[in-house]
Image (cartoon, rainbow, N blue to C red):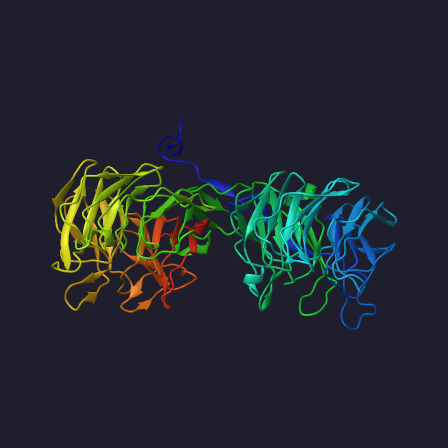
Length: 633
């Protein structure tokens, strides 16, 4: 006989633990056997989590001599002293195993930037061919016969972008980094590697979050770390499954661990002890399943060893958005979802041209974005974003600025209106243009020229709302025009005249927020929602705001930045079609920014800060998938 559940219902799976983004997300650090020596930092590390080598480094001020040759070997539970290096030094790179390793470069009493290279055969160190250029504080990984060192600090040129590869006999210079820096972290092999974080002269003392990927011939910038850091020599794994851990971001040492999946870094379980200048077992074979971190400086020079391991439950399942299950451990029903308030803003690439109050394709994406206009005369500059870098494209035919918005995507976008200095005395232009992913083409004009208007929709079905008519005009307007892919038609006005607002959605379901109306003039917090034929009031924004940006859908949108009367703000909030929830704020208060994306993945770029400076910064918005307890009331 069939059961009712089998006919009408569905079976909810029972799991012993929550679903996770990946196996690495289930990992944790545990304390292993301590080093035998007094704590020391900046040592060479090589090997794996249960068979590692620690060589050289620098001890505390009381240690004599401070530069050491000491080598210790780890068997998975304890360290044993073995034969020393031939030359004492610190800030050394390492690669290999406990039976075949190299310890490279560094600095010592006799050489501020050593090129020395020593080879370990399982029992003793032997000097072999040197680096081409003496170096310290670089990233290094690989094996005893195929390793690389990259970045670092060279006395002749300070922070460097140089990259050398070891073939077991000689070092050969290879393709340079895009950004010269020292104290970064590396993992991988000579044909596929990652170099992350570090410090540049311009970043002092904060460090950078930049990440570059090596494909065997060139370095390419990829998605940044979540946490800028340096003095984090600790790295482990391969290019598509690696980790970095610890480091320094003034004024704090870090315990944060980040795992890389070949595309982006995700924060996972922290070290037990926040530490910088530690060494790690960086053999590529471990991936993200296991790792070892040892020594370094926490609140003092430390001998602590920590082991990373992934411990998924027997019924481990990866996160599946929308999945419902029963967690038998916590006795609760769970659902996997993306909750906008848990989203974060992180640094992206910088625009080639700083700009404020310009257009953007609000329905584009975080990895295929588009902005245009402003940026200085002739105000036509167009740039595309691929999620990693901005590239300049063909200019608008009619340069313009002052917040005129845009509807569509990176390869199909419309913009209309705006301030055209070359059109004087017609300040508020009627010109409309469509972008096809390569160039802009003029299409039929607006019925009414305007500046500071809002646009949402697509290149074939858009709505242009409100705005101002510029010098000599009747100031702020309530008029609305609809685009059908061929021409503009006047449609239902917004309830009150408005300009300088944010907007989001499609032609038949969108909204505007904030802005300035004539009387006063007054900055408002009102939301007006559009259903394709009429306007109605939505939930008020948490504060009055103008020159903000927005992206998303009618029932799932993000608003960020803007100006609260005269003060720039960093505020961000999410809208569910009725109410607002406060998000994490932007890194800097700014107005006149442009945003692209959805409620769970997007970015804002450019703008103007409180000091009046025009910005090039990009901030990316990401909402993680997470498990939430289902409550019944």
